[in-house]
Image 1 (cartoon, rainbow, N blue to C red):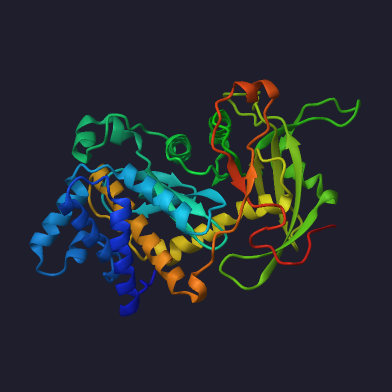
Image 2: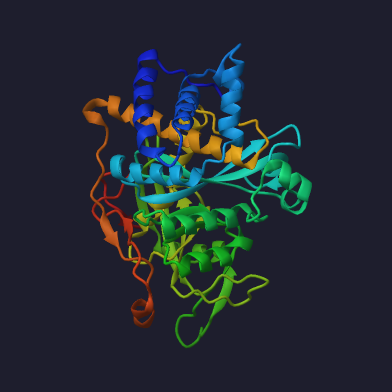
Length: 439
């Protein structure tokens, strides 16, 4: 991918913004020299041409700078979690209010076997086996912009079971080998429990095998979700009338296709493009998501299966399961499509500031680099917003969403939690002024 080079006046403005972000986000770093090296690294991520390695950031002949940056990134024991939490809280106050937390997978292909977490593994996003690292970013996403605030790095089995490899990479004793989806779900749970953020719907793609556990984990914390699933997923649904007592089980694709007569047409604008698009939607209430180890799981909240056709398609092509049952299909669909907003910002901003470029071998170094790249991403986008006419897009007022439906007994016993937020019904980000109608 071609690297974007900013004009000199833009980098100067971003450098000034970085100074502000250092004072706001890095208070948890105890020493002034640590904050100074964070400033050097952030400016390097924004200004350096080509790959954003520590050597390139330090510059030719600057061996002392390179050594200090290596120490700060790969060895210094500063905790990255308070910085990420402060970044998320700052973005909620200053950027356009996020509509969802979007999970974005990131694959980093490698030539060797020394980078932490690297291994030969099948990667669904690539459709093949690759020697790579697998990570996930949690992004605060609106229809106008998205920002990564939390990262997970998946560790294949040998990285946690082989003691020598674990020690060399500095992998914490608490780290385990999980699937990328499991790592991401745990990260969302930590954010929801302790980051003091307004709770938002979580949008992510989930493999069939990870789905029951993902639903259960989010249901326990009353986290609203929109999970993209495969059309082959077996789903259970109730029968209609005395002749079909149910429950019945069928692939998601077959159930949605059987409801094609109930489709609604939604006209919307694709992220990053001017042209409109037309999508046909329908939905069905489902009872369970069967799996081999859990043949009859029983979610404590009703689930909705949503299916989509492109305008000319004969069969539905996209499917989502959600526990949000009180919003129009158009809103649910546009929440799901915030993944396109994230993909666009990942390509245009996050990759140019070097999110994939860390070449060190330590677990701590990878997370330090990802944290600083996230701050650089925010500086780039916030700086562009401030340069735009009128100072960018102000945050929209958002309606309160009470969370997934629960029984009265459950509500009375539950501990109060921050409410999740969805846009109010009249304001659907990305939708054209033309009305949704039923075909």
